[in-house]
Length: 478
Ligand SMILES: *Cc1c(COP(=O)(O)O)cnc(C)c1O
Image 1 (cartoon, protein in one colour):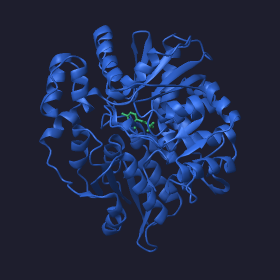
Image 2 (spheres, rainbow, N blue to C red):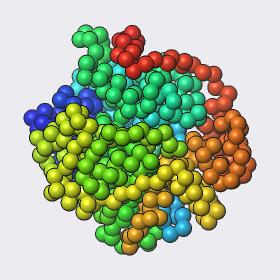
Image 3 (tube, helix red, strand yellow):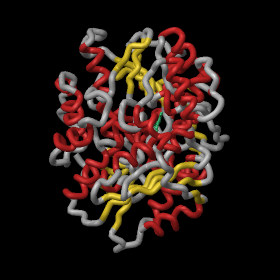
């Protein structure tokens, strides 16, 4: 199974090469056909680690020792060997993806990605060091730093928007230890930061510098593939608990930013998993809601900072993969992307829109609705959720379905303690770490250990630059 660019079917790569490169050389994303002969029913009977091995081997078939890679990625790193527990909350289910080392769902993928990248480097006979460049809206950065820290043969530079992350998120990043890590703030919002990183990828690093670039963002297929696993895992849990017979559909509601998480659900569906509707939940930055409803993707709109900063995005990179899967026409995708770049807007064909409507749902929720959902679920169900999860929950409440509904929960409430505490009626003034303590006192929900310890950690990274300086900054680090 070869990967190819979404914009040119002649730009092909093995799965190991695709993981190493991150982005195709024409700016497209790597995609592949659905794996042939994948026995999804058999996979549902496996434990989480074996399930991960089976799903990843099917999606990334060129990796030689997937068993060993999965073991090294996950053993002892998460609060539970289940990795992503499913919890019933009222009449719905919450899939907790935040039980990893940095308390955000990005850990599921970013624990695995360093294993994939170093294995790919070895298999491809690459002697250059791999330089991971990442733009983060808050959670990817820390999860990537934790994943790549001191991994031989790799270095990592994380750029985050100076004003775009929470205090806890920032503290997580600027205290990061490790001999191969670098963290830098960029003035502007996430889109500015992501655009800057994309420009560095286009320009490349000088030949012969002993480095090559790769990405830990979800444009890398090695980031997406591990996320496919938990869609199977949630389904298997419902089956095991007798909530559904084998073959019944399950709907998933996904708090969405860069469209990676929800696209992983689509990949699971293509592998045979009975996924009903995939519901894309957005915050006030509702470009995806409008797009899914109308077929017009229009990024020419204000950018809002919300209580769910990891979803504050106007250009969702992974949507390009979905467009490709739905039309399987590289020229059509390349056309949409050219329009987006040149005009800031594109309109998909009626045929494509119809396919979107068959499989996807959509909805958005502003900050007030987010807080109201956190308060309501806490009062009615005694379950504490973070702001991103609450966006999805709120959208799920407004969405009718006969199928069981799984809401993906993407962060610990303690990553956004001020918003969560005020949503349940607490006093959220003052220092964010004091707020964490008060949230714990009020709810009894345990504070993840790594977050509690942040307070004592020294700040190790203080650089702040403008977007224009990003390229020179990277070259200076080589
Ligand atoms: C990254 C992130 C999201 C959005 O996921 P995408 O794959 O970018 O759509 C949602 N919630 C949290 C907490 C995140 O960190």
